Amino acid sequence: MRNELVTREVFELETSRIEREITLTREMFEREILLTRELFEERFKVVDERFNSLNFKLNLFIAIALLALTLANPTFVALIERLFR
Image 1: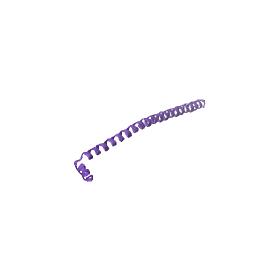
Image 2: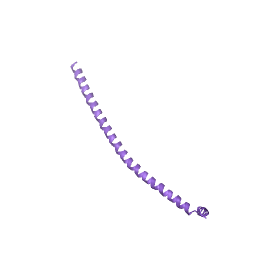
Image 3: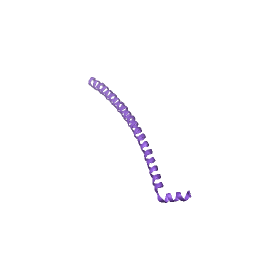
Image 4: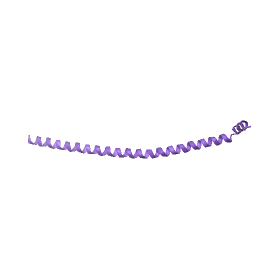
């Protein structure tokens, strides 16, 4: 009977210790995952801002190129000449 009680107490203590370790490990991983997620969100914000800036510049370049091609088009020039005669 005595051995059985000691074994049960040891088992419960060991189980309790293991559960605490699991809880601590889980909390540590959750903190690390949260920090990693925040870091990635910050980096993606920077990438998104740069992409938006680049996208605006590209749109501006396309608009200028289309305007230049339109103004250089002989048919368009002839049409403008007819309108202003």
